[in-house]
Amino acid sequence: MADESNPIVRLRQQAREAGWGVELDETLQFERPELKHLYDLWRLKAAALNDLPARADLDARMLKPFLRHLTIVERAPDAEGKPHFRFRLQGSALVQHFGEQTGKLLENSIPPGIVEAWNTGYDALLKAKKPVRVLTFYQMPSVDYLTGESFSVPLGNPGGAPTSVLTVTYFRPRAG
Picture 1 (tube, rainbow, N blue to C red):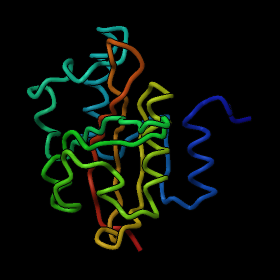
Picture 2: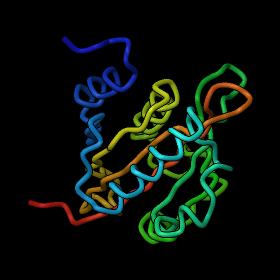
Picture 3: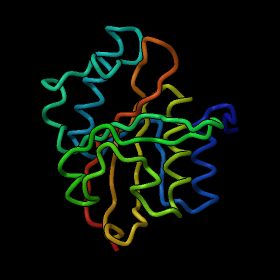
């Protein structure tokens, strides 16, 4: 029986029912060796801190091999508390496919039909407070020929609950 209190389990079910083109894997069994390496680095840092590493804990030297593929989004709720996310950092491999989004709100960057899926996904990651492997079958016309494998993890927040998500994504052409 699935644990309905787990935000990732709920997200997986919602994504499947809504046809969001996303698969979530909590086993963190990455195909890309780069993502396996990043997960190992992250795990060592988390163990040393006994907590989620914050953005400051993951310096540019550590992340250098992944910077082209890295995205950091930050939760920026509106006055009613509805989740919105702002791109704080976007690597050049992502810019190549999606255009420059750094500083923009998610809803100003992606098609309206998929904003809910992305907001819900980021929000679930923040609630789960743990990493996840994400397989994305892009549904945006400019990249619908790609799939992405990602390592996504909330970043620690010494002042309270996590508010940012770090994601490293590698693309490949969609089979088929």
